[in-house]
Amino acid sequence: MKFRIRCVGKVLLVLVGIGVLGWAVMTLWNWVMPALFVGARAIDFAHALGLLVLSRILFGGFRGHGGWRARRHWRKWEAMTPEERERFQAAWRTRSGE
Image (cartoon, helix red, strand yellow):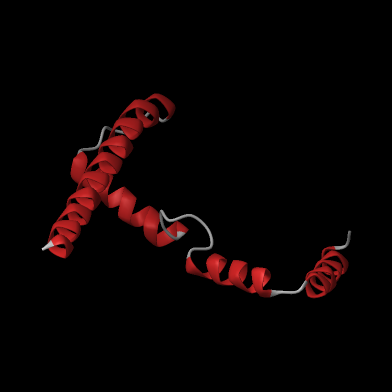
């Protein structure tokens, strides 16, 4: 029962998040774009959601950088001995040109 409640809660949270993001895009577009560009016109909520999907496709998402890969690298870092960490940092410095 708790699992179902948690799942329904997460679905509702995602739907509310999508709605808020869509509203924010719509509001910002309607506030900025017509003022900057003469031919730009106001958009409605559906077009704002379309812009969100388009930005997801073009720019890679809303989760930030790394995701599960960053956690995997952090676990590898924590599993290293201090000597391994020092060698890794030295190799990284030589590659980056410091």
